[in-house]
Length: 432
Image (cartoon, rainbow, N blue to C red; front, top):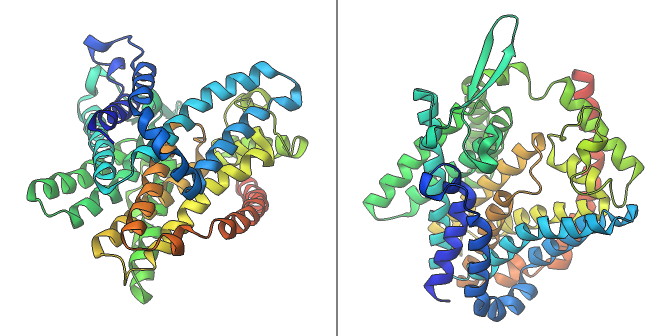
């Protein structure tokens, strides 16, 4: 693949992540995301045509993403609104198109490293922006933080760092910063260049501090998931349990001020209950793509990616969505177990990705993020890393060749997770 398609793809990522057209005056108002997406597709078309069959045959997540897109579009057919089907296909199709581009264009270690560092540098920029907001009151583009009242009677406020586009929500900003922490750390541990190691180490500090400035409760949960999963894959015996205990202690001690008021609150548990009621009434196709707030008691989103998907898309959409991250995590964990064959650097890369993904999927249990580019960017990096590393070490069949087995077990886990979600919500309601 030529270098130009990769540069355009990275440009596409930059526009999605830091959105200069929202804050940099020379670019204000330009619809750069759509233009860049179209340009990337046409320039990368030869690569797409060349790689399509390989990706289709070997990467089961590509098929699952397409099934998820079709299921989301079909969520409107139960209501016989074909305009909604077309709208869903157009909106969600852009995200699945981005996911497919990543899978096809990240075909070797060089391309994977370039895309990873593009992501990490953008996240470092977001971290600096968050820290500036925290200390000066304004970030890049003179963007102020979000001010939220904790208690109006007592005059208690909290300031939460936010950025642009997707990251105007502090929870999203915190999540991407949390995801970047293990990825930066792995680069620090595996790179030989002193300058790159210094940048990676600085990235760990910036992202950690930046995440703290967001005061995000969902982000705190993600940090716990990330640290606990890293403890699972990188340590053994008593060290594993000591590290997991330390992770819990650190999160508890350093948790932002809003965390002390609970993970959700009564309003969130009511919304989760609304989601289960919608699923009960529409178990196959759901209430329709992006229609949760129309049926919710307070016209809000669920603040739970899994309940939200279940309510809007039913089992037809929830199962392929669940399988997307289930299969990816299973393949990552399976590959990590071949540490006697993998090089230490490759094993550490996979462990970092496993940790980052686990943190993200833990955090979104308290956030609705199933239709966002960021999720599919992280998934694509993990999927392509598994395939590139396993191909290099002759492990493709052992790690990714058990597609039917993984899909069968994943489907069972998906259905079982509905029961777990129901029990969890009952517990949350009881506590609230």
